[in-house]
View 1 (spheres, rainbow, N blue to C red):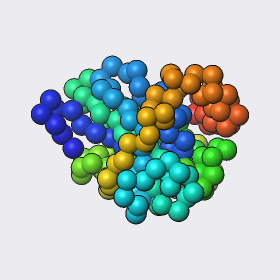
View 2 (cartoon, one colour; view 1 turned 90 degrees about the vertical axis):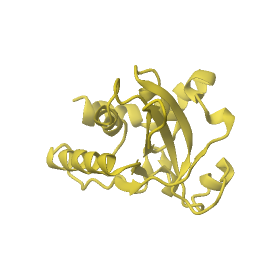
View 3 (spheres, rainbow, N blue to C red; view 1 turned 90 degrees about the horizontal axis):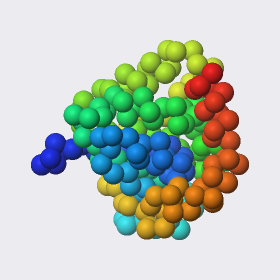
View 4 (cartoon, rainbow, N blue to C red; view 1 turned 45 degrees about the horizontal axis):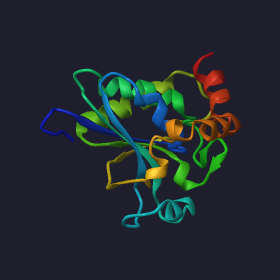
Length: 178
C-alpha cells in the first residue's frame, strides 16, 4: 500500500500491541505506529469487543514507513525478535486468539518477503517447535482507542510493569539475543 509520498504500510500482530509499538516507534524512516485491531468479523470493534476473543481480531500495529529509509525487510528483521513464533495461543502472559501472531501483507512483495523470512526462522534451528505465525492478506485495520496509542510513553510505569511481568523480555533474551 503506497501513498503520494511513497510511504508504505506494514501490519504486524505480536501479542499485546502495547509491547509492539516501542521497538518500531523511534526508528529513522518510521512515520507512525498505530495500535489497533485487524483480521476479525466485527466492524469498528472496541477494545471490549476484541479482548473477549470472540471478534476474530488480532491486536496489531500498523506501521507507516518510508521504504527509502527503512525497508520492509528491516521491519521483518525487527518484528521476529519481538515474539514467540511457536505459540499459537497468544503471547507470553496474554492468552487468547486476539494475542496470536501474524504478518498481514499489503502487496505481493511483502507476502514474498514475509514467507521467506518465516522460512529462514524455521530453518535456523532456533526453535524446536514449528513456527505458527500466520502470513495473511491485510484486512481492514481499526485504530484502537486513544488511551492505547503510544501507551509506553503516556503510561510509562504501567507499561514497564506489565512488560516485566509478561515474560516477553526473558523470552527475547533467551531465544533471540543468546
